[in-house]
Image 1 (tube, rainbow, N blue to C red):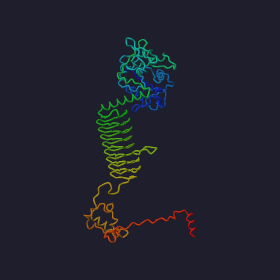
Image 2: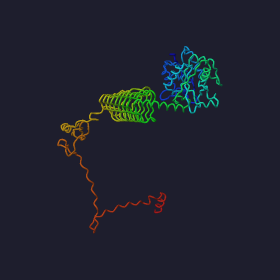
Image 3: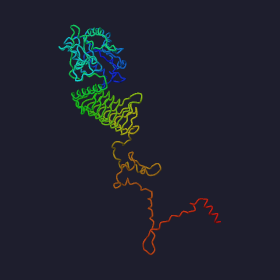
Image 4: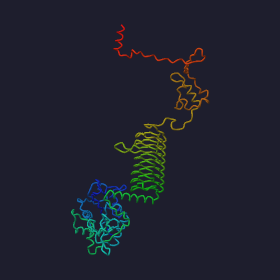
Amino acid sequence: MSLVRAVILAAGEGTRMKSELPKVLHPICGRPMVAYALHLAAAAGVKQPIVVIGHGAEAVKAVLPKEVKAVVQTKQQGTGDAVLAIKRSLGGLGGDLLILYADTPLLRRTTVQHLIESHRKNNATCTLLTTHLADPSGYGRIVREPAGQIIGVLEESEANASQRAIREINVGPLICKTQALFDALAVVKPTGSKQELFLTHVIAHLARQEGAKIHSIRVEETSEALGINSRAELARAIAIVRERLTEMHLRNGVTIEDPQSTYIEQGVTIGVDTIIRPFTVIETGVAIGRRCRVGPFARLRSGVAIGDGARIGNFAELVRTKVGSDVRINHVSYLGDATVEEGANIGAGTITANYDGTAKHPTRIGKKAFIGCDTILIAPVSVGPGAVTGAGSVLTRTHDVPANTLVMGVPARPAPAGRGGTRPAATNKSRTRLAAAPSKDGSSGRAAARVDGRPRGADMPSRRRVSSVTAAKPSRRRPAKPARPSRPRRVAGRGRMAKPPAKKARPVRRAARRPVRKRLARAKSRR
């Protein structure tokens, strides 16, 4: 079996994307575009692929795995020039060279494997991937002789009217004998105003060589041929990958109630009999167990692991959090950098304040703990097994809650005895001691007595059943005297009472209203 090496072309600028980010780094369902080509190379058995980078070379190189060798194409002068740039990195021209494109991410693994197998079976010089499109605009056309042998690939700008009517197009990826490929690249000259060298020109040169055989494999699923050169094509690719991922999980025994509104990225594992409800977002690196229920409107970010039988409800967001089996997080909560052990209940509005502005800190919630509504846990903090937090509690950092303890308040503190639980009622003897004990001011202790930390009378029976012991000294405070009603006046000679006449308002002296000068003048005239 001949050696197969792989090169991935990722040096293009992608001007039609209109983006500062290199085209091959645009994400598709949680993975950069170039990662799909690397996955195809790995599926073909290539352990150390070569990636040709150019535009945004440093940014692209930063996302490549360590085992990948990166070669920089200093000037982007065509796909043929990009292949020439790796000649020294190959270390020899034996075997076959698989050429993949980073901007063609929809190829299936089985398609590439079939390409390699067909190339070896037919002992071909070069094998291409082709497909038929109803609208082949923008793609290179496959030109064949009457017998069906491929004699070249024409770019649309180079084709005449009859050639543009050809519906068979060149998808891009190919596999070629390494020696024959570089011999052709050494002969073919750059063309066009930019003096670019394209692999399509190499195909025509190889087809003219004596004994050369150009073979092709047709891609039946036309979506695999989609190359990404614009934002619209990127959106189409994302939709296709989402549909494929959804179909995979459905085949594996997962219920997805509304696939159109559910977003699941690459690298997600979901157990059987789990239900994913509408408008749920599950990002890369999430593992969900069996018989779980997630959503609606839930968001699970990278680093989340959910145990069997857990429930993640509406408007819950989790990141870098491990959730044990049978945990309930049903409503409006955020858990970050947390560990929730099995059987715990997380109340609505629970927040883990894991970020202090400089670093992120962990939160640990023990088995069967009960976190009350609107509880804020300021990390680092831990809640012991069986512990309970009251609604609205704020657990400050490093103030851990012991097991089987009730805390409440802001900041949260252990609850007083008798709060939050059932306590036995006070006996008559205890009430007698409380009633008889004198207070500091010498008065009876009955007036200020508290039974079991509660105000006097909070646990007492009604007055109808009060005993002689509980009957306290009557209050010394005199009742207020009722107001004496006014007596009506008797009307003489009529034998009936009449209301007293209302008092008339005292008339205001007009002199007070007169100006001062007039009053002085009048007083002077009277003299």
